[in-house]
Image (cartoon, rainbow, N blue to C red; front, side, top):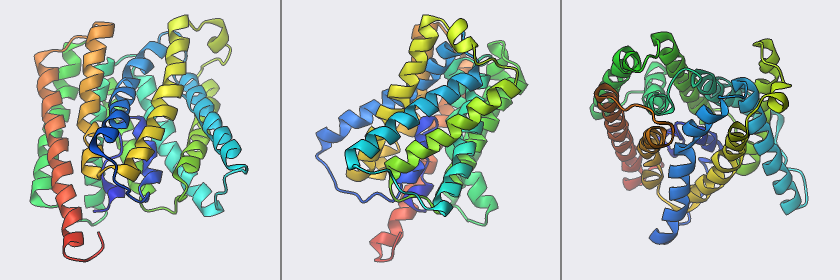
Length: 331
């Protein structure tokens, strides 16, 4: 298993799949914790931001504007900094289009739509199952995971089932809305898996900027087809929703991704991967403290099961990927 197969963030960090080939230049331990903390908080808080944005901004329009704005800023900064426009081959552009539709349009867009009905903490716990779905896809594609990995997979889906069937019911959320979030997580997983197999740009930052532009443009284009009105952004959006939209674009997308790329260059993947089970904890805590969302016993139990299962899978697969390298063969 390569670094590209390790779980990208359950939320916006799925964009980081284009950065999986960045060479590692280890940094002092203390220096790593600042960007890692940014990834923990920024990506963990995106679920809260989405929930607040959804109050008065149509979900597809809001998600689309967020990514178009973030992508445009990143693309402009890269172009000015380097003195030229980033170059991406046609095959790589086609790959970015496929991946961006899966990650941003179906994945993030799906969660943004679902969070009109699903509490942010509950959505975060369901999306935390994304690494488990990657494992399912890999298995269906012919890979043979270790027994420990399969054990973690089985345990994880017990937690998912518990949340879908009982956790949502306790909080007044219907099973279809819960399954909508699960479907978004599955799209994220498929996009992440394809990103490690399709020809992607070696320039991770430029690739992500283009990915955001494509995915955001598709979301904006789908917005009126789903009955949303673009005028709602200016006519009906409240101040807190607009602030949440700006926060998602600046901190959830630009700042967190920059920190993530830096981490890929300076920290071991085993340390970076900890966000996969820290982010949902941050999301649940913020949802309860800021929005007053309930944390029931079933929600807590299901969430713990999923987080533990993801930790087991990451640990088992990290050992698998490091073993060949220790024997002198490429990982």
